[in-house]
Image (cartoon, rainbow, N blue to C red; front, side, top):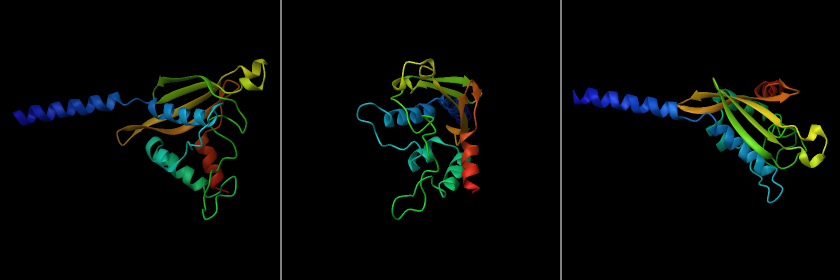
Length: 174
């Protein structure tokens, strides 16, 4: 009887831990790393898609697509390496140029969708186009008991743009 009670308690504890997994956590880390790279003072040189982050924060399918696309780097890889970033822009900041990230918000929209909003265009001018938020929709799923990013969709002109994972698959098919 004690073992049955202990087993039930263990199952309830495990279920609570699974429910407690925060789907915004991987998104917040990705946005934080990207924001650090664009900081006005003391920018970092951390890579959102470093091997350790790929393994921890992204789904196996996303990692597979990224690694395949990395065999076709946008720029020549460092001496002695055969892979590099497949992107010729920052897919989180949404371009090659940008400003420090301001007013960062990460919202759990439910059903595996997490939206990140921030402004990274204000330093370009006072026009209304520079006051608009950059918006990214992250699809987050549970994998191995933890939330991971399976895809990222930039929102362009109010509409969900092209999937970053699909872009990686297109690059890999070259």
